[in-house]
Image 1 (cartoon, rainbow, N blue to C red):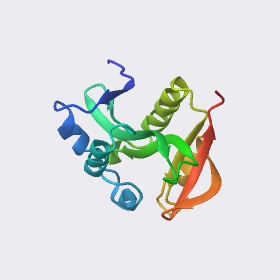
Image 2 (image 1 turned 45 degrees about the horizontal axis):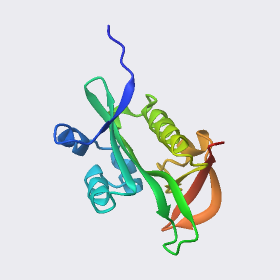
Image 3 (image 1 turned 30 degrees about the vertical axis):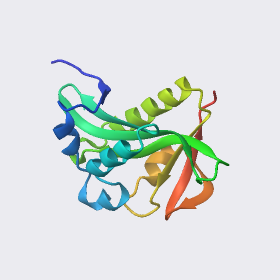
Image 4 (image 1 turned 120 degrees about the vertical axis):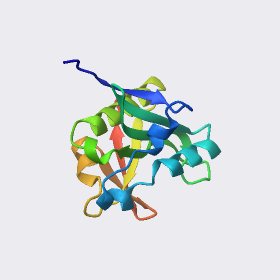
Length: 156
């Protein structure tokens, strides 16, 4: 039996259909936009968006999109980086791929010299709040478009 490790891949014409096929559980759809919307946003924000397919062997198990150096309030007073989207395929949840995705983004942020890692989540039932809190994110008191803003100190 061959053991594989998850990895991130850039979105290419070769894996686009696999990325577009990622679907979360139906009860989670309120909490995260579909991959097609994320890729459209990445297209219009190419300097900020970092979309990646999460692969395990030849299986697409999830999608993430990080953001780098975004003017959070669009007034120049606060520039942030973090996780914009995380979609783990319904049948692949609970296998560590979400943790891998967050750790991968954290590693990329550290590589870029970023000290704080931001994420937002819907604080409702079936949302990802417990997942992010379990990884060490803490609410910073902000709410943006109904979502809790969480931050993780990267200790750079």
